[in-house]
Image (cartoon, rainbow, N blue to C red; front, side, top):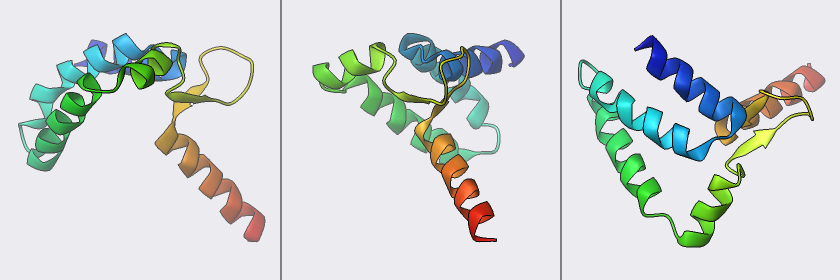
Length: 95
C-alpha cells in the first residue's frame, strides 16, 4: 500500500499521467473495505479517464493535468489541491 501511495504522490508532483492512472487503478481494491462510495466513484473516474478525447489525453500526457507552482521540481499539485491553496490564501487575506 505504501508503494502505491508513493507512486501516486510522485505522479501528482511530477505530472506523469501514465503513472497517475496506473497507481490510481491499483488503489481501487483498497476502497472496497469500508469506503463503498469511493469505490463506486473511483471506478467511474477511471472509466472516464480511459475514454478521454484524444486531444485532452495528449495534453494530459504533456503534464497539463496539474498546476505548477514554481520552476523548481516536484512541486506540482492537482487542480483540487491548488484550488484549496488559493482558498486558504483568500481566507488569510480577509482575516
